[in-house]
Image (cartoon, rainbow, N blue to C red; front, side, top):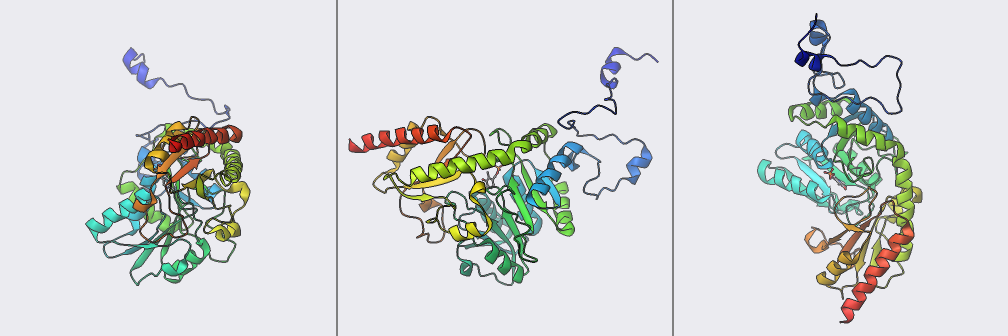
Length: 400
Ligand SMILES: *Cc1c(COP(=O)(O)O)cnc(C)c1O
């Protein structure tokens, strides 16, 4: 029967033939997912984590990405969230209730700490802070429920005693959640430390960083190996309406093919910069887990290799430089752009004042203002030249 042209516009999709095959998988965009008939509708298990029912629960596009992230990280089950922070919040809101104690490293990703402090104030969760390189500062009480781990830690890049911390948490029947953004599943396997039964329970990953690799897409993941834990997370994910765009998922999935190569390249570039930065008199300390003088270096060495040491390196400026000096240094950089995040093609710089960021004493970091470099895909020689020019600018300025 001939239909009205308006109806034809809506109901005349060309179906792809069965035999067609493309390099990238087809992209599904969906809020509605169409059931073949009422049997299919009523046979569907609404609590089945990987069944198709509605866009928020996932499509072949988002499940493909999730499967691959879980595989890279050594996990089995996955959930995706619209940002790394949203993935962190999913874990916190799923497992923490009134009276529960949560342990966080002093160098934890700042917004995670902020989120937990908010939960503490509003819902009576107790936040405790430990020193990531000193297991003895982690003293869980009977109410301890969850510990957040991060390797290496944000900004100051201490590598924690992951194995010691996980062992202690397990002995106290606590859940262990790792912010795995730095290692990206490539630097080490958080679900298998090579010691029997030693594994984190939950790995959270800001896919915004290395998996996206473009500096243009926000996304996060929560990976587990335990079916029960995953199912609890899945229910929270569902009732909170957390979902991601199919287009974004397809973009990140497309970038996964080159992730390991980019990660290794950025690791190598960061190591080259590290060697050069250490020779500069403007810095009193250079922070990178592969450097012997960095806190937690031996823990890094136990489970990582130089090939996979990520593209982040921080420097502490000589205290003779004040905030205005450091600002002018950052402004004088041309290739390093001033911005948050990392893992993209463009190198980034950010300045920090640790005084406002740490709860515990941190005598392993020298006094002075701190700058973090995130190494992109530019040639390292050009990046070194860029920093050298900015240092010359800084020294001319401080002579005035
Ligand atoms: C960027 C980042 C996050 C948050 O990811 P967003 O997608 O930006 O919300 C979490 N943890 C770490 C370590 C990060 O670097």
